[in-house]
Length: 160
Image 1 (spheres, one colour):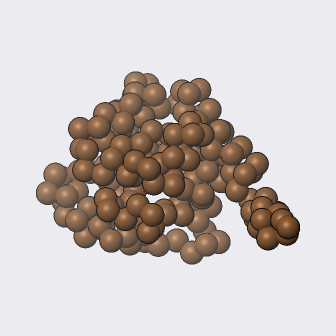
Image 2 (cartoon, one colour):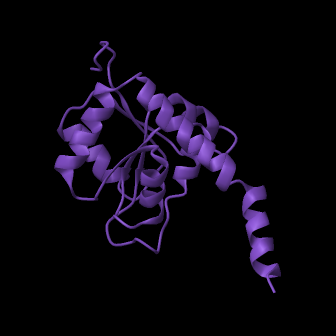
């Protein structure tokens, strides 16, 4: 429960590579506050992105530099804070820390991940969480939109 008495629910959307393990974990632990929602078509994605107070952004250990969790950009787009489980030095980990739009733990550091989950629960509904989400959204608008990115490409290829 959050400090104001609200129940905490974990909603997992889609069918990522660890879905089977998550389903088994939830079943073994008899977690009644976890639900699994199938993959959402792009036209419906905005609803699940806006439904959460905080979003997980997770990548497996060992794929830094090879894979970037693009879900971060959707999370920033709806102005929600991020609970990252990402390798230090990965692109999105550095963005989250630079922007101040969430908290990040290393994959496998379960003690720190648990502390971060608890921090988000303890701060549910706070101005601090709202500000984290706002910072992510503002950064996206000023630095990562299609128009900004195209402008950067044009600038890079036209430098003589």
